[in-house]
Length: 171
Image 1 (tube, rainbow, N blue to C red):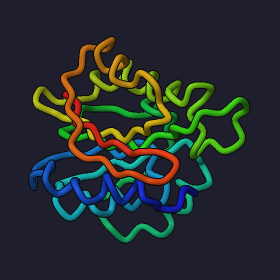
Image 2 (cartoon, one colour):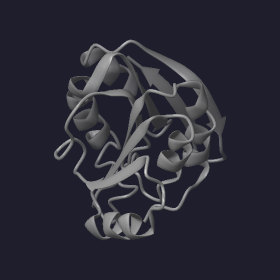
Image 3 (cartoon, rainbow, N blue to C red):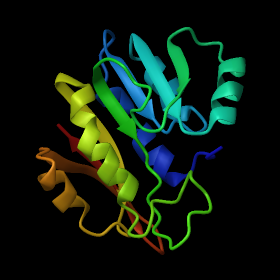
């Protein structure tokens, strides 16, 4: 399980500004479920998915919140419907060998982000938005946004000694 860290907390502090009480939210790569839990305070329903089947089983067993539904999915593979807001704190660290799915973004760090962007528009409501976290270690991420024709703006950033984290809004 991906324990919440500074990237999760950066995304977490903006959730309430993007959700209305009738919204349905999709939390891709839910990890600990912290973003799904926060979203459920403001949304009608939250679908939280992860590629880790054991994690999903554990989250389902411990879930006491009727607004949250945890499901196994490799990005959008088991997702149905459209959403007002999609949250994604992706694995974004570049690596030569995938060791830890929860943090490994592939060779350039953007392989999973690329897959996500290619499919995400199919799951957004007409005026839906995406909150996507990226790192300064991810080169050319804004070119990917343009490639898939997203309107985007950087809504926050946080600097650390080894990288900057960026939170983008896409539509």
